[in-house]
Length: 453
Image 1 (cartoon, rainbow, N blue to C red):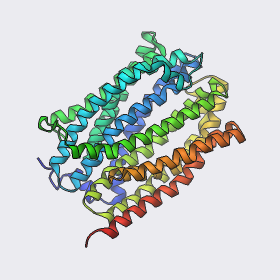
Image 2: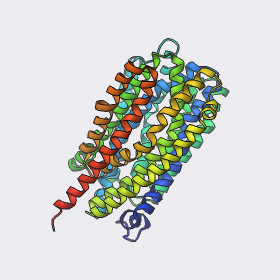
Image 3: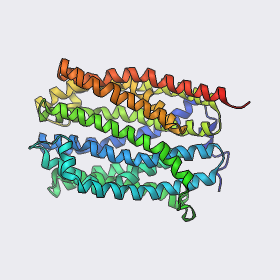
Image 4: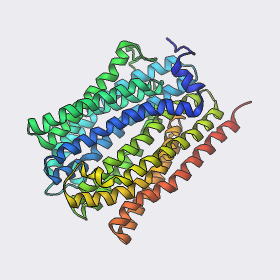
């Protein structure tokens, strides 16, 4: 059944004032994502209570595996979501329903491949993450669980993206909240009561993702969504697969490049001591509050841009871009101020080690300077994906990670040592904000100029 034109979700995508639409779709996601910060912070907090900084370091070393798992789920979620939003904008509800169904099937297949390949290469993966003698065993325990539970992690993230593509943002947030609540409850049970320590933290994370995935599935099963997976659509068409992977593969490569840069960063940090890795891990997780804010606004903007691109409403796309950049940059400036002022207190929540706290404060006050810039870059990338132009989104990431960030990371680390290493990212993000917004604005104006009269 086609969505009613007066459905409030469609109205928000097509007619709501740009700033209001960005806030309406972005704020619920930000609320959910801020709650999801607890996924990482709760693990870090409870492991910190073990008073073992090597286990803290292990969780940070293992984090790229979670990033890669999410990256591979984004291949399906981002590709399918882009096609769904554009199909709804063009009035093709049947194609949108078919795409949702294919997204479900591909998620199951994708997760099975990740688990099988990951387990076969487990020791090599842990070594490549930078784990050493004191952290190798802990890191391997954590990574093993994450790989075995990849279906739940990938399902949780992908199904949330599919819900957002049709404007069902509040439903997608429910999955985030349920998953995080489960993780908070299960962490002390597995870490302390069952004595599983860092491995228990990983199990709690996976079970939390399973609960979040189940919550998202419940909305589809109850029929409270605009679109529904259906058995008659279980077989993908060549066109839908091509569209999903055309957008999805570059999106995955973007996150994989980010993960690779994160691994380079960790390997450089190990040279300053394994406790430095622990400090950087805590600082990064505190900063994830700001990261989730800009990601929430960007993800909330994505279906608006995709819908209006499908409807060829280019003027609205420009207005949404301007409103989104203003909203996200102003919000992140406020978060930056909080991180700078309360850095010692924030670090002290997670560890009692004076060395870890001192290093973490220094790191946090440097890397928080990315916040006023990175939101606009993320919004531009997601808008290109929503428009079905992943080559531009991937080009932004390629320039950002390989041409700017990694070379700057290596160069500044060599010249200025640890300070140079942690300031490489803020410098990169300041440059990329100007580049990415200019590219997106130019692309929209070019589409508008080429539109048939």
